[in-house]
Length: 381
Ligand SMILES: Cc1cc2nc3c(=O)[nH]c(=O)nc-3n(C[C@H](O)[C@H](O)[C@H](O)COP(=O)(O)OP(=O)(O)OC[C@H]3O[C@@H](n4cnc5c(N)ncnc54)[C@H](O)[C@@H]3O)c2cc1C
Image 1: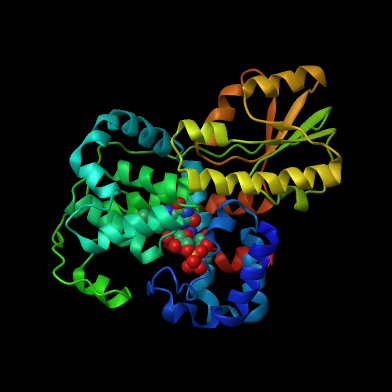
Image 2: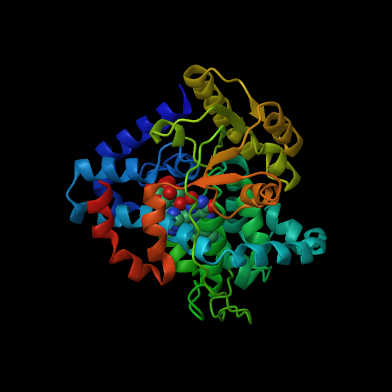
């Protein structure tokens, strides 16, 4: 079955059979073999194989808002985080430069034990192994893991965020970096998330005895204050244009009514390989790329796949391309790669109406964002 069909089937199954009990059951991590209490749609939504609007519409068509409010809010956490990081992109650049400085610590025993699942904390080891084997962790396990990493093992949050991003099939720079900062107490200054033994034992399927966690930790602190900069959204100019599809907005082509002169796929895997993304994640992205390539072939009779800057510049010169158009790339390694080429050729990012509208509400806390949800739903459902 094609990946988009799998995603649509999963959305249908979840909406029809499990969504009604989501608010009651969602916090339980019943283990990898029993994952029906949350949607498990994240790997599809991250790559927009199905997008937020489709998920919200499907949920909304089954139940009144009040019954599914919690689920809708969770979907909007993603939108909130993405808008927040677009408004403060320096947070990602600062995280990247911290990672460079921390590179040596990747050889330390404490770091290698943590990512190898060889610490003295059994639940932590289980989650480290589960993440590497499945490419997924339940939300609650992500919170516990991040909290233990930061406050009990006292490892830098940036290294933990990096480990997650490279192994999660749903790895998303905004949701991941900002969730780690939230756990550390850097997002809402001084408000951190401390994992407690009773909570882990109540909400996980396997019971863990003798957990020795630092349950009295204080929040992390940073000196830097990140200010917001307005988000710039390009206007479309498709004069002899090349549309470059990519897998961070995989179904964009199914949605846009704009027409372009040429079509191709940009395969970012070589960019991500250099950043040491896991094989599992790269393989998943390769499968998505194959599906997008197929779509472009069937609909636009193009088999062009571009993998690096030289290949891109070659096609630009051969076909006398005046403008490259891409679905908007939010903060991340892919955007950093393309941003460098923007000095050499005109590249237009096309943003969806949904993103353009919602991102403006990410300028405060999530509570402020939730007040806008009814207005957003009226506009997009
Ligand atoms: C430390 C940490 C790191 C995380 N890293 C990522 C990441 O890289 N990518 C990612 O998509 N999510 C991330 N999350 C958020 C969340 O854990 C996952 O989105 C969720 O577990 C995915 O499972 P699901 O599809 O069953 O979610 P459901 O509970 O069914 O929620 C539906 C959808 O809403 C979105 N969503 C739900 N909760 C959140 C949340 N807290 N933040 C953002 N979006 C949310 C996802 O797209 C999800 O698929 C992280 C959370 C923490 C605490």
